[in-house]
Length: 211
Image 1 (cartoon, helix red, strand yellow):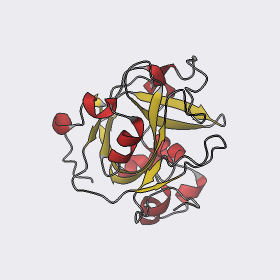
Image 2: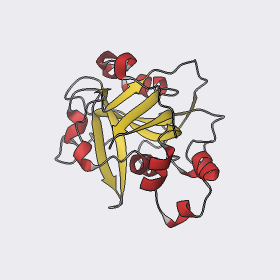
Image 3: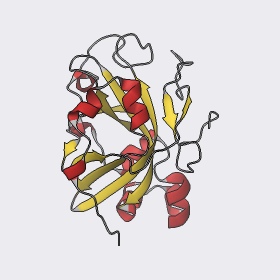
């Protein structure tokens, strides 16, 4: 059973997320995202993010303006923007900057810290059933945005959810971390922009040719 020392008392403030998106994306590396779900606390150290800027970023959902799908992205900072890709997977983002700006940070990967059994249950696929708990934790559980969203139980209903208090919040990194930078993954527009941030030595980041 996990021993969970997490508390929203020291959670990152609204001001932290109101800053420029690439700064937020970098500074989130090493921070811990916590979600209380069904009486269970899920927590993970953020080891990989991508910044998606406002209307000048051709890869950003906000590039062509506000739509029903991306409406949450134009809301106030420190709230979730969740969307579906390929008609299957969900991606969880944290809205940044000022309201109406249309910028967000994609959560690409975390290192699981608490609620492992529940994460495994939510990721109950043929692949994960064939792996031991140790193997799953190290390489498969949350090492990609779709896996992360599934493990943490995010849904489209979580759009606009605040990250400033229970049941969802982010704690600051407990130590300085070396952060590596690369182009974002899996996009064709603005593909050379150095807006992916990650822990270079972490085994929990998503598989990538840039690692």
